[in-house]
Length: 386
Image (tube, rainbow, N blue to C red; front, side):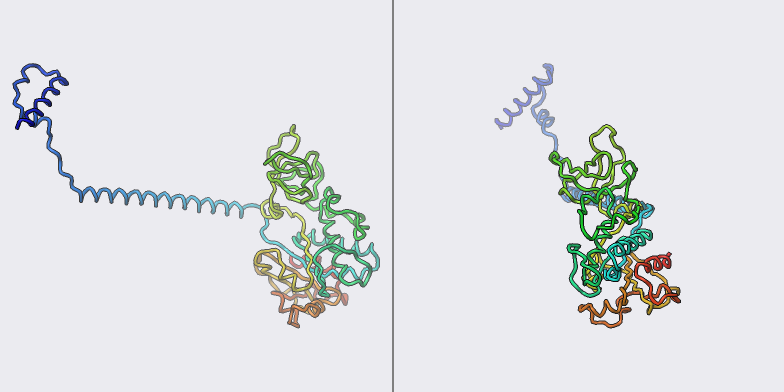
């Protein structure tokens, strides 16, 4: 038809202009030009195409799954390496806690003797690396802070307060005592006691990975961290903004600028020097209102997994064996033993103290004295454990 011929002529003319064809091409049949321009279209197999798309999606999903598994495998390998590294470190994961009644100070006849008695307990605990000292009131009174005064021999409850205060004072590094312990009657003779000389009681130029310090009240720039007095010649700038007057444990940076105005460090948990560095880092002091509160108010998740009660009525310690533990608690009684503490505790319905403990031991069988003073028992107990 005429429209088709017109289209062919138009296509032919375009071909001539584009390819600069010679005059001989003018005599080509129009049908041959149409055949050259209109190539046959290949028929699409849609089933095959859908199958290819489906296969491509499947391969992409498999690739994503493989990448995810590889990342998970790398993460597990990193966690395993971290666990092995932590296990290979010289740190100590377990803790040892000691509980004793504050009434042992009631038997001392003067403030000097009470202070000396508390110093003996502190030194015995430090020598054998006790991590927590629990002072409980065997009479069952509600004493949960060190506020108050010891009024004299035989005064109920106040022995716990004075004992806890002296223990806290001795554990605190000397350069921090002025910040945390103002003058108090209970500490009147504490300066006469021999220093505990624990690893965290640093000298001014002593090098260590960790130090105890107090956050100072000093203006700082935004997001620059607070300054901490760690008993060094210069203050330490930490990575966090904390409230002034707070006691913190600081890990000092490996590289320090000697010309800088302050050292650099980061705040860590108080247990990090023990668990990662392998240092004995002193003890914490906790007040318990009664014997049952020693167990129920444990600061450790899950409580104590091994508890030992000491009494002359207990089993022979030579025949006992300690099972593996994470948090060990050793409880000592007062002048009248754990039985008196049990009778005064209204929250306990049992009459036999041995049911409260995993082991109820006599750590000094065949003793040469009718009674063993409480301040001597930690030494005997720890010597037995060693």
